[in-house]
Image 1: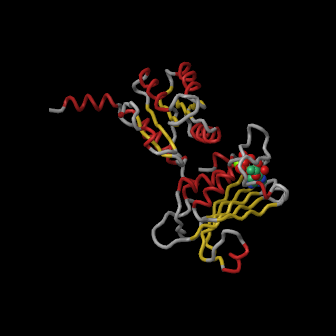
Image 2: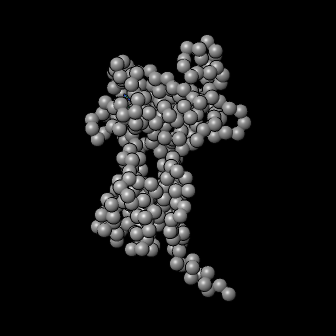
Image 3: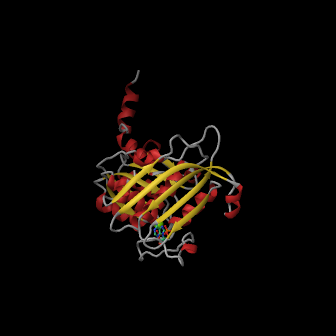
Length: 302
Ligand SMILES: Nc1ncnc2c1ncn2[C@@H]1O[C@H](COP(=O)(O)OP(=O)(O)O)[C@@H](O)[C@H]1O
Ligand SMILES: [Mg+2]
């Protein structure tokens, strides 16, 4: 899944552990962590290089744990992302997890990638270690407490799982730029033609110019600038009743309550979602039989 993000000049080596390593984790969030680390590694290797993603089991002893804030002794599943890029200067290292800390030019970096990683790592009772020096590349290690029994494992296998493809035209409406870019870039790589908008008003403008082509709307429910995703969806559905609509929100499906919706054309996906989840949902929505056709068939039953 990361090949299309890193491009051709970076060699990706994925080294999964010999056996599945169980951790208690949200797969979508772990994917987000990996994505942020991979995108940073790519940015650190503009002329190409090597990227290695590995998982292994490490027993942390109490002596080692005592040295590290947040660390606890015991078995841990360690996710390691190593690049051969430009490295991080010593004076920057204490700041890289701060929100909005970025050394990238305006418009390129948000400074939110590692802050997000840090937040997710905390949620999982895990901790992080970074090793880096200018010119010598960077290594991020994340220590997840290993658990017994049934649990999701670090999804190294999903890294190479291809996303479903298509050539339809989509409109993605999302106010958070990083998310909008990530989703639209990914869908473009999957073959789709993707229009984007940061709010309802912009989306209406894009729609007016391209409504004959757009087959699916993916929109955040809660957006700035007054118009909600459901209001937008409702308006577009009047103009094109066949438009497939996917709503998304970090606030759960409750965000859709008390709204007037056409149920047969709509679905909902909770944030955070993984790229695999969103790409799969979009493909299945585009492939589903036409709603009117189903209704006709229903009507002809005895
Ligand atoms: N793998 C890496 N190699 C070199 N520098 C990195 C790496 N990962 C992160 N950094 C540094 O940390 C900063 C913050 O990263 P991040 O929070 O993801 O924000 P952004 O990528 O938007 O700048 C980056 O701007 C960069 O200076
Ligand atoms: Mg980043």
